Image (cartoon, rainbow, N blue to C red):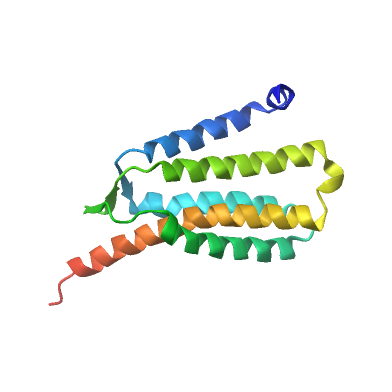
Length: 167
């Protein structure tokens, strides 16, 4: 275990601290703007899609990833609580939850594990089962993030639609 940590590049620690920072912020009551709810899922999905696109057999991996993404999005409707949300000017005030930090750490751990396995066992990288599990796991975790953001955006949009009065 110590050898694994010694061989880890410094940028990985930086990514871990950024992910942890945003996850800890989500543990407390905070304000989420429309812009942050739109950008967050894009960052996570693009990060996963870049890693999928750089490997062989990307079409099958994309299909499995999409399946995981949809499954995770539906799980997000049950996993997160949407009851303690207040609307504010152009955004939402969300009650804190450890679940966001947990999902962010799962995303980091999943990506770290896949990278470690690829570095230690390069002969297994191109096996179908490894690609399948990697894409499915990444899709599920990203689905939890995307599903939460889409649900929050729909709450924000519903509030904005109700605020418009017809003339």
